[in-house]
Structures are given as structure tokens and as C-alpha cells.
Image (cartoon, rainbow, N blue to C red; front, side):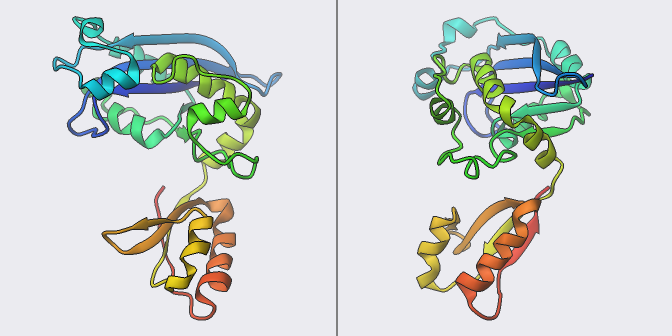
Length: 239
């Protein structure tokens, strides 16, 4: 029987170098040989005083305020024990949550296998136009009544991933590629946008991230639909 976690954080901002964690939610689950779908076994949620006033924006997004956080702290020993005993740690937009967690001195040296419910499930292939957590919930017929509260977001993530759990785990072990449509002709911009490429204004290049199982399709698209000759695209392995 394997154990896993879903983790969600609320923070004072989006910069892991300077902002602070103000809430954590954890849903623990198990997957057994008899039951391939995950089953919840435990939950943990707590808020933490960042020792600085919350911005009005964060108060509005989370519903938290300074009084609710005053003197509170997360049990980081418990968090570490949960992570250390898990075969997989899942978050929706894992780069964000992992970035903050790895900055905590109490979690120094942790090395779990991470998975992202936003990018390791091909939501587009399943007919969904957005990867945003609460829109996905609505598209699946339910509502996260307390969006941007950590434990509720974990529960929402758990409900969303359950039908796609095998795909999520499989893709989490694949390489991720950042593909750059270098020197793409101007007239190709609509095709690139329709294929979810984003424009990097600083580097002046269209780019997107794809998983290992779709990289060949992306190469074929660029060669036939964008360059129509010499293929100038570039790739970087992200993970």
C-alpha cells in the first residue's frame, strides 16, 4: 500500500524568496493493490502568523486577516513526517508550492517525488479548456465553496484527480520540455496562440511547455505549420 499527499499553501505573495506561508492544507491518501483509486486517510490544516500585516489583496483572496493568524504556527515537524512517509506529493501548480516549502528550514533535505495536478493531467485532451482549479471543479459539476483556503483546495484537488490518478502518476515521471518557436514568422502567431504558446516579450519568442509523451507531436507541428522548411525551434528539458 502506497501513501501520498496533496498539499496546498496560502502565502503573503508569490515570491518564495521574500513572501511567507500563512496557511497549509494537507490531504493524506492511500492506494492499495485492491483499490487503484486513492482513499483519504488523514487531513491536516493550520495557519501561521507571518509577523507582518497582510495586504488587502491577500485578505480579499483568502478571507484570512491578521487577527486570525496572530500567534498561530504550523506544526512543521508533523508536516515533515507526513512528507517523509509519502511516495508522492501532489499540488495544483506544484512549482509554486514546492518553491515555498523548500525554503522552510524545518524541511531541509526533503526529497519526495512531486506531481502536478495542473500539468501532469492533460486537461485539454479530456475536453476542458482551463487548468484553473476552481473552473475545473465547476466543469466537473461541483463547487469549491471556500476557494483559496488551503485544506478546501486540497479536497477539491483530490476530487478532481481521482478519475485521472493513473495518468497523473505516469506523467509525473516524464520529462518536461520547454519549447521555443525561435524566429517564428509573424504570420504564424495565430497558429502558435491557438496551440497555447505564450509570448515572452523580453526574449521576443513564443514558447510553451510540453510533456515527454507529446514532444514529437509538437516538433511535427512546428516543422509543418510554422517553419515549413528549416526547423529553427529550440528545446530545453525543464525536469
